Length: 552
Image (cartoon, rainbow, N blue to C red; front, side):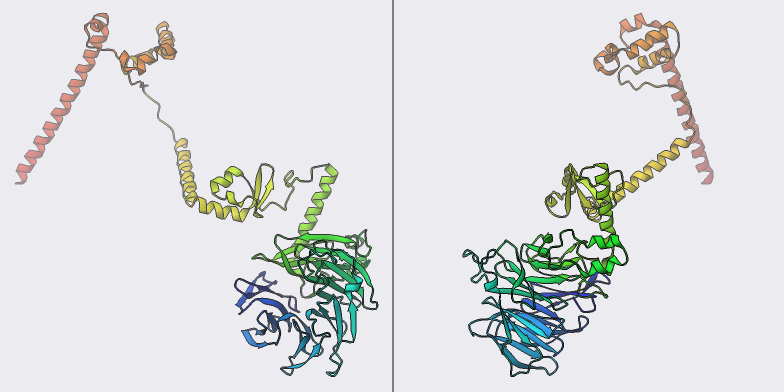
C-alpha cells in the first residue's frame, strides 16, 4: 500500500501484471503488464508514481505515473527488496553471497554487502522504521545486521543472530521429512514500529519473537504445518503479531496491551474492552484466518491517517485466486475510513448474537422475526429454483450460502441469472397486467339481462331446452324436469349420440302429436321469414338496376 494510504498495488501472474486499486473510489485505477513473474514490490514515493518491481529474470523495473520508466539487471537472481529512505538506497537480497545496493539519488550501484561464508545466500531482507538497521535472513538460519550509517569500508555485518540454535527442537524444525532442504532457513523478517521487537519466520513453520536487546527469543510460535512463514507483520495497535504460511494467518500477542487500548480507554471504557483480551499473555492466539486458496502475502489495510495499518483490523490477502481476499477482525483493530461500513455490520452481528443468547434461539438462525438486516440483500432459493434457472452447478461454491432446505443467493446475481434464463419475462408480465386492467374495466360495466337460457347440450338440445324452461317453475312438472337434469342416470340422453331422438319417426309422431304440430308451426314460420328476406333482396336489386338505367 502507498504511503498516503490511498492506493493498493497487487502483483499477479498468468500473464505477469500489476494492478493499482484506488480505495477512495473502490475501483481499479490501472493495470500494467510486465515481462516476467513478480517477486517483490517496493513503494518509493507517497503514491503509485514511484515504485520498484523485482522480477524473476534478474530485472528490477521502475514505474512512474505514466508507466514503465526504466529497468536494470542484477548479477544474481533476486529474492527480496527493501528501501532505506535515509540513504536513498534500494537493498536487494539475492541468491549469491552479496546484498546489492542501488543508490537512487546517484543512479548507480554502491559496493555490495558481503556474506560469509560465500556458500551462504540471502533469502529475505527488512529495514527497521525506527533505527538505521538492515536485517538480512540467510539460508544457514542466521540473521545478519548492517548499520546503514556505516561507510562503504565496513561492508560486513556488525552482528549475527543464530536463530537455528535458538529454535532447535521446536515444532517441525528437526523433521527430516520436510520438503525443504534446510528447515532452519530464514524466510521472513519484520520489525516493530517502535524498534524494540523483531520477528523471524523459518522454513520449518516457526515464528520467533525477539527483543532487540537480547539474543534469546521471547516466544516461539509453531504453525504446525511445516510450511515456510512467508510474511510477518507487527500490529502495535492490538499488540499482536500476524504470521502467515500457505494454510493460514495466525494472530497472536507479542505484548500485553496495545496502543488502541490506552487510546480508547480515555474516551470510552466499553470501546477499550473491545481491544482488551482476557488472555493477554505473550504468545496467546487471538484468531486464525483460513482462506479459500494458498496465501502468498498479506498487508494491513490502512487509510490516510494510518497508511501502514498499525491500528487497522482489515487484512488484505493475496492468494492463488483471481481476486484478493479481505478479512475484517474487530478484535484486532478498527475499520479504515474508506470501508467504515464494516463497523455497522459487526455491530448488527453482535446485537443479533446478544438477542439470541437472551431469547435462547438457535445459533444457526439467519433470519428471525424480520429483524435481521445483514441478509436483506439475499434471495432464498430452493434446489428446484436453481434447476429452473440452470445454475445448479453453483451448489458448493461461495456464491450460495446453504440454509435449511435451500440456499441464500445475492439478489443482484439472482436478478441477472433470471434475466438470462427467461429474457421475455417482462413482456409476459406487462401483457398480464394489461389483461387484468381490461378485465377490471369490463367488470365495472352493466351487463345486459339474459332473455333466454339456451342449452349447451350436443344431443337433443330441444328437449334439454324444454326441460330447463320447465325447471324454472315451481310446479310438479318443473320439479320432475329439474330431477331429470340433475340425475346422472339421464346424462347420456344429452351427451351420447346413440340416444338421439328421431322426430321424423312414425312412433314419435303418434306418441307426441302436439310436439309434431309445434315443430311444423315453427318450421313454417322460419320458411316465411326466409321468403320475406328473399323478396326484400329482389326489390333492392330491381331498384339498383333501374338506377343504373337512368344514369346511362
